[in-house]
Length: 221
Image (cartoon, rainbow, N blue to C red; front, side, top):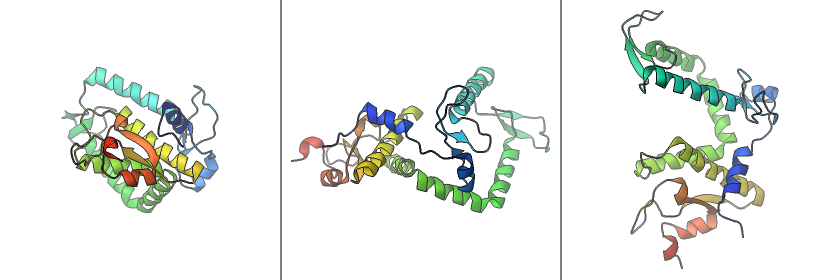
């Protein structure tokens, strides 16, 4: 009988990434590629096709930049600047980078207009290559609608939830048996409703999950 969920599966899920060369990523119009080799900082992580930068390094750099911005400007994401930007806009700017928000919106709108088909193709490829992330995000949206996700759930907790969906896909690929991520205490239970949080989730077979329905474990014969 397959185990439900433990820390080892979480570790395996986070390390699991298919090898993809830079040229293959470009051919597939993917944003990332993965060689399995460590970067100069010894991170074994995906890399950005555009800059070839290691994602772990990029995340560390972004985190350091955010911390620097908080120390320098406080916790505000935007601020008002009466001085016109290079395009003549007077208004709010992003704290990080001091870039003009109006310029950013115009640039993003023009990019989407010119590269609409490319964006759609990237989204399609992402969904195809990352079904666990799509499933996790879908469940997150469903749980939010049901007000089952507390405000105190952190980004790290959401990553743990996403890892559970990755494990379900890994087990399905390895065994040929469909697996689901189950809420131990159902979101829509008859007597009590659970939360969409990591410790209320487990990976089980689809058959077991469907037979459980919205019942609590102690109420299942």
